[in-house]
Image (tube, rainbow over all chains, first blue to last red; front, top):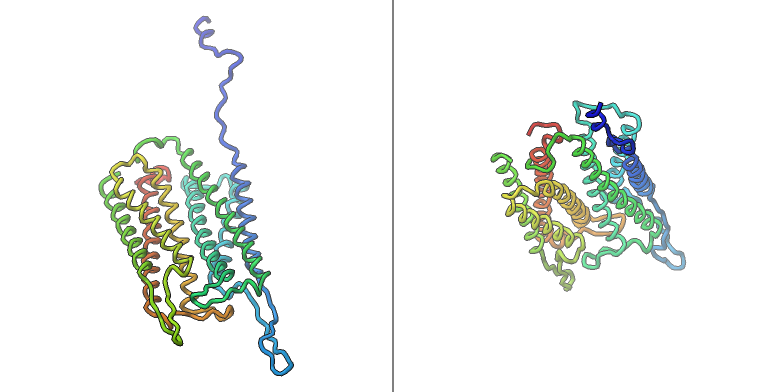
Length: 200
Length: 163
């Protein structure tokens, strides 16, 4: 009995096993990223403005012409819409897998695939938003050297909507970077038998 | 890391270094003057903010590649290098994406916005910029390959793949 008494832990101390993180942080971040990229897609996708301008005056009758600004006129904005749409779809799939498919696995590579897809989509949204932001800058300030006039003074709503979509996409990009970091950390922690502090 | 992995990684980094240096040099030396109705107008890369961003982004990637090539014997920072490889891939893709968008406007114009293409007046400048963009594209692709290879060789066991 005496050796067992020595081996028993004190009543105040309990050995608590280390619980795995609940994963709600990533879920909230993914919801925010989904909101950001989906709103960027929708706002830019519905971005259209039509205006009539007086082009010339013949005698006393002004000649009016209707001009429209649509996002499809610029390939950079088309790519922006497509890239943000794809990233929104990725976030939807990841949220669904997180909530409903906790047992889905492919040869034990579940966390690895999540990390890789997060990285890929971060690069995708980065390319999309950077391509669009310089077209927006060109539309806002023009380029006097190339004789390209700015269009934002005439199509103010188009420019405002486009600017809002780009800001939302930048927020989505920042969130995707954080999500990628968390996914990689989760992946590295899960392989606890791999030496993390050693040589590769 | 084994010898072959080190050779392949260093080779890819050398190619990326060459591509970024070429992109920077070709973009910076692109300028042409054209005379239109007795007015000279000069096309320089610095007139366009996108091309300045392109040069800066390629310079950052070039500097990083140089530092990693010089420090490649010490592999204690291998995790940081993999992370920075991913960051550099994103930077390079963003710079080439932005520059391509504006270059397309310069080449084909945008009839809806009333922007005329300028390649007709300054063809040499256009060719120079095209060359720089091709080098930038090659650098982005090589960096993507490098990232995949770095992940495979450095973090192979973590991904469940035998390196």
